[in-house]
Length: 160
Length: 434
Image: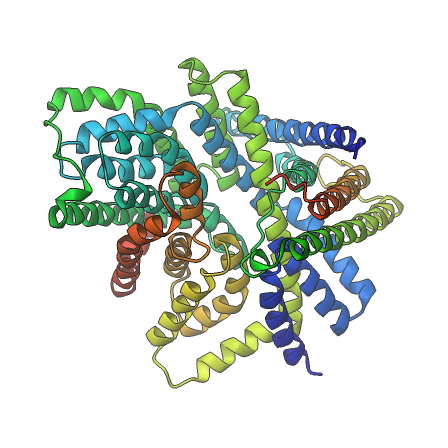
């Protein structure tokens, strides 16, 4: 548990990366709208926003996870004895962690395939592989987040 | 086992797992993945799940969600809620139950820059409940009016509910936003009438009305809320005339809300950071549910369940309106266990083919779905808005808040009936759009 704050620093850094993506998204879109009025739209806005969307959203997933901000219904489990609730919380964390690991692993494979195929965006020719690798990294960090929240739940150390 | 049987088992399994405290998004993704793996292969299911995740996150249409959340957060952290409340109070304070009525209109005003009901209730609750308590408003009324007013958050545009509905059904998000304006104003008016009627019937709910404020003072009170009105007209106007896409409207809205707040010195660096991190948390929450629902709907589509349900319902000898009412009642039941977004994401892939088969207007149905999802926010046992307000008004028991919310829930159901009878309430404004 002593290493937990270090992990949270990783998540915090990742969240800042995502938030920077969001700020850039706002800036590019506003520049495009204003530029369009004067006949100079920003070329490739749509594909930049799509890539930035992937970066932003994947980067903030881990933050929501460690803050235990995901929506869950505890209508039934909430009535269980405390120990059973902790066990369910741990199981939930493990399931989340495994799923994120699987998605992260497959996203790496998709990224490698895109690299081999030379996958690039249509207008700006941005290679999709680095973005896919970043998204995969975010999934792996989110997997750790689910694992940590599961362990926290088992130890009765929930944030909520 | 037939695909249809696997689809049906998948739906049942998912409903069972939903109450297991596992995050809703994970449950949907897990069942969707397992079902797809059974019907095709584990490798294909993994490929589908990973590509759906990336596709959802990199979907241009869905990027509107963090942008509108950011706009609402900037507005919330700039202290606009206090100004809105003060303005509403100047205009409504002299009516019996005036502070509660002012709360409803302040909520409607805040909903115009915030797309989430829970966020609207939480933000407005912290400002309005202490004020109403000071003036001795009865606990059920002072809490329930915020619970109900908060629900306007996903009806008055911008609305996360409409965005999600629009993406799944391929309906214009701009038109959905505009379709929510008249119902939002009408519902706020109906909430006003029910508060007035309650106070008239039971004067112990609220103190004597305050003295009437002069028209000049009323007009000058608009100064504090004018910024948000400008942003709303700018964003919705741009969407209405087709100048913006919803994503552009979200970005422009966020940018101008921040710019105006900075110019008026209403927000500092701490407020900006808080807005950004709140946006991160809410975005992560919404997208896990959205990704899960997308994975689950891929499995559902493969199982042919939605099309079979649509065919079956189409062959029923029931009138289309009865089928519609049955579907809407399903929302009332689902609202007992699910949150708004999950409910919309889960039901629409099944209900929407039925709606198109029956020939109903998809904008109109979108408005009905969003209002029904709102009813779920204020009814037991899940009623998210009630729980949020219970956290703000710690001296009021949960049961009292639920009890106070029932008249509002009934009004909302009556309002759904009104929109069924008069669809133009929802479809009138969008008809003028390009």
